[in-house]
Amino acid sequence: MSDLKGRIPLLGSERKMVQGARKVGKIDPNEPVRVTVVVRPRPSLHGGKDIEAMALRPLSERRYLRHDEFEAARGAAPDDLAKVRAFAGRYSLRVEQVDASRRSVVLSGTAKQLGEAFGVELARYKHLMGEYRGRVGPIYLPPDLSPIVTAVLGLDDRPQARPNFRAAKKRAGGGVSYAPPQVAALYDFPSGLDGTGETVAIIELGGGYSTDDIQKYFAGLGIPVPTVVSSSVDGATNAPTGDPNGPDGEVMLDIEVVGSVAPKAQIVVYFAPNTDAGFLDAVTTAAHDAQHNPSVISISWGDAESNYTSQAMQAMDQAFQDAASLGITVCAASGDGGSGDGVSDGLAHVDFPASATFALGCGGTSLRSTGNAISSEVVWNDQPLDGAGGGGVSDVFPIPSWQGKAGVPPSANPGGRVGRGVPDVCGDADPATGYLVRVDGSESTIGGTSAVAPLWSGLVLLINQKLGKKAGYLNPLLYGPAAASFHDITSGNNGAYKAGPGWDACTGLGSPDGAKLAASISG
Image (cartoon, rainbow, N blue to C red):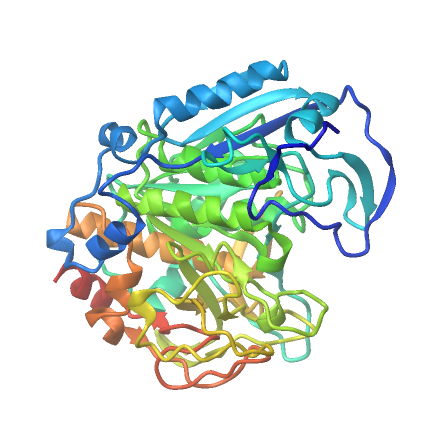
């Protein structure tokens, strides 16, 4: 580790050991390491507050940036990028990639070089999830980079997120399996639309899909096979593991749900390493993909806010803000661990990135039907057997202006913080009322809020097709006049929070009445 004299800690970069992990040794100084350096946006009229103000306007008055306009409006300043390049040169680091629109510079070198460059000691740690390269404490920057750099990601390669899906378990009395189009019909998704002309970006941090599975699945449903394209980020590829209970289950669930709802939409799957750098790079690559030009990004991976660094969360929210300025809707699963989100400290936690200000947080219900109509819908909570829908109050993000009148309660944690309420919306997620899917050659039933993010993504694709343009950042619209376009879920709890009339920290505004919602947004 280099001499820290004169260095400045990077705000929000502090890392702790994974709970239960232990340090097992020093790292090979010659181990190759690759990091993503995120720099500040240039000063612009298109700042976060302006984007939020733009999104509060009716859809007809919104003006989104084109990809060719974005760099000049919100990209990185050339001088800032030049300073990062010069810094890399001082430590003999290789500049792998510079992207002004994504405001990122990818650097590579040995563990020793990167440790000295950023003032950290990298070591090898062991945990139940496996070994990882880690660090403890903050990252340090030289004074000339301190005002410029907002995040340095990738020094630590611990798994950053987990897939939010649950395979149905055998139980007394059995359960219900829905094909995704049946769920869409119960929610009255707008008819006569198929996603023609739209593209959805799906973010995946592991696993893969089989073209044979996709063809057989959609043939079985009598639905045209959608166009599915894979995109490699940071060296990750479409790599099925052969284990339907592993990440392949997430990948196939996402593709099959959104493809069933909007079969004529193009599906682009962005595969990235499951690290803080990989997660962010996948999102920014998708948002700035001018070739495929997605109008929706679907994210079913996440973890409790407490398991991220502040720099990583702020960088991701900034990426979602950029997506909003381009007219892209970001749908994110709210987690499957109830109000605790799988953290064992007895406190309430919300899942990130669903808690980000510029994401549409998608929570979970248990959905029952009689014939073609909903007979009951309550909060999904089958803990400890089969999970529960995540939701609550963010410990990181303040309550947004558009959520100010929703009745978000104080946090259930000591101090009663008032912050961003999660989720915004919901849909069927209970594995006992789950989705029929095909994974690694076999059919099964899967639930989890992982299914809700692609379900809502599919609905947004249909709305965009109906509008003939991108709806974009939906949250302010949903909390406005469109709030009457939901099935209000008033029964159940996810642990610390109870459902009730109006918005609640279990199911948000409710599950969609798709036709009403499309009409309200277009109006």
